[in-house]
Length: 174
Image (cartoon, rainbow, N blue to C red; front, side, top):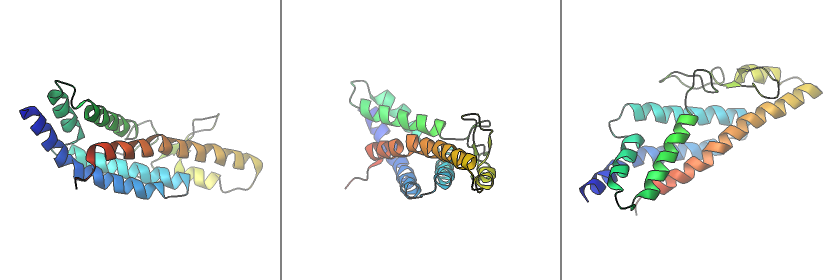
């Protein structure tokens, strides 16, 4: 019982940050340009991750607390949701050789987001791709479709699932 109280307290401490992230993700969802949407998505997630690293009670701490309190399976759904959120944060976070190549504390821009390495296309920054995709010929149109598809697909694979998980664990209590 005491472990359950500690777990619920840790979640109540991290819930405001999750709700703020959800609000940021809702704004990202309304961005029409796939490359801009990707950059703004990374900025929201990276900023959240930076703040989580600086606080003693974060999503990881809450997940651990709920795992400890889950002796009878009463928190299984919460544990699964928090662990899934952590997986999204890892996969949508910074990676030295990935898409988001920023350092902690660095703002995400089109100059440090990399796209390509698909369908034989080279990897360039989003800003370089914007310049390359401004021409009006058949090859450029095909490349634009590929690069924008890569950006849109990445955001789609994380944004809505993250928002649903946040709603599961951090819904405001009325």
